[in-house]
Length: 94
Image (cartoon, rainbow, N blue to C red; front, side, top):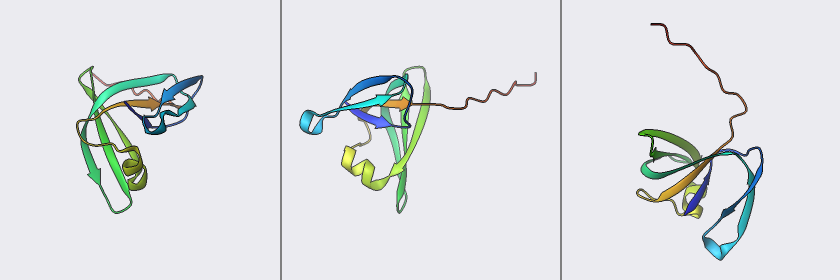
């Protein structure tokens, strides 16, 4: 399993990194497992789209260097780790 850091977070948890078996600590409560369904590469950055079990998606933007170092490819299982400092709600008008 590859850990994809979308942002840092709240409480410390461990995340196993496959290369070298090292452990990385991070502080995020929101952890969503999913499958990489799309990678859009630019010249420096990329957008990785992850399909979640709840029939929704989440995307992460990272450098191409990070994408290649993590070895993330389409079809991989990843964990999206998310910290949202601000969550804005907008009421839909009916």
